Image (cartoon, rainbow, N blue to C red):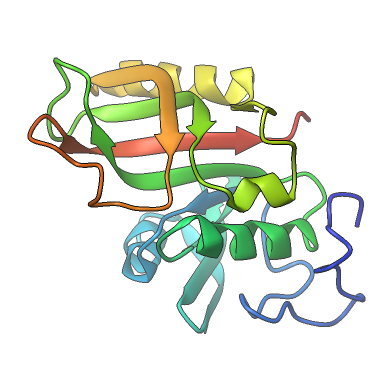
Length: 192
């Protein structure tokens, strides 16, 4: 596979070690919640589910929603778990678009619980990604995916914020009285 890291690439017909998935079981569009129970809640909104699989803490569902084939794969918590999931997916899917969904902290004034956060890019404060790209390399979402999320939020009337976010190895250590938890859609995408 052209996107796969040689350390996780697998021969055709075999399954990935951690996520337990094989070729053809994932769509090109992949939602990435942290909590494995969210996969079932998301899949309940699909028009049809063609595939479900649980392996370790990773829960997967693939199906269709309004005619679009998509998958949902839980990542667990933290950048190290996300790295495992994304690396193994890259060995299976040629041109995936990832959309991270879940909660995030917020320090910006005017943000409220329940607001959507659409991340246009992220400051990488963790070190996991440094194993794959130089530490100065920007983590920027694909502009078409950002625009699609903005348009959807506006069409559905959801209060939303667009901007730069940050990834960090800890959760509670940097919280203060100003932080609030907000649902987020943090994007990464390979150009199509």
